[in-house]
Length: 402
Image (cartoon, rainbow, N blue to C red):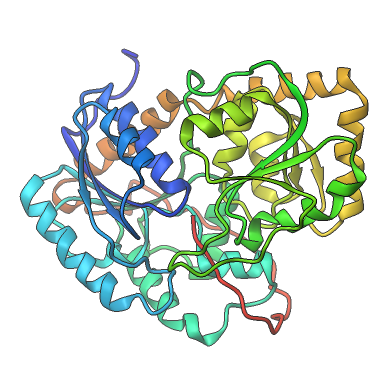
């Protein structure tokens, strides 16, 4: 890995424990450690699970600072967000990192000494537009303001896809003149996800309560398929509220450990993810590395990542979903071909590539000087376009991020 750029000595990174951001943070911390960069990981949203604690323990030099502060997209979180901000500032004084890496928005407005990278894994406003249509209701006005403040104060903003970056700028406005906005794709370790002897089954992995994942569509088509459809993931929202019960036609595997997810993906022949909203899709990447043929929601971010290595369906068209799954079930040769394409494409999204992107960005910010001051004359701002949203549907929803 001699061609990777040199990076800072240490990074203070935040991560929530609710979704895929934690897996992303662990993968990036491991890749940075291979380049001699120490990561201090500050976790929010709830206590670490046993499997999360185990994963963190396998990263060389990783220091974990654990909290249970509520996240900015949760209900009435702002007292916790403020307390978490004080805690993060204290952590900076304690660990003296070269770079602050925030996997959330609001804390970008804090007065850290080190330059701040804000990573856009998802956001409530783009979730709402994609899943329910229209603008998020007034109860998210505080969220709008806090996100805008965090983005305006960031030294750089990163998104895992151009589609997510476009959505972020569409919903929260352009970044200040001279701000750095870049796309750095997520990654997964191919050594952890590998094809195993395949079984005649379709698999989905994701939060069952999150309407963005569109698990209910799989429940509708499962009775009309010759193979079982299995689904792994939690049906309990943050805070302990039970989500909608999945349709009985799905075989529920519950919440699996990382090794359990890898095993399930390894044995599945087809991975189905008819998502309405997916800024990157880490589970899809893991499925592709595991040798699954992919059937995905036809949305810009998934098209951007997977190109011709997947079959795409309108998330609202369950008959199209049934036909796509049946086509792969009935044609073993085509299924193997699509699985091979997906794995070949997935190998492009390596931890090494992700580390290269972040180390290059960190180095650029450090060269600017203390605080990562911007240099508008040397850098240009990326802009985004977006279509007007459709009228809002009048229905209550939980709008998860990440």
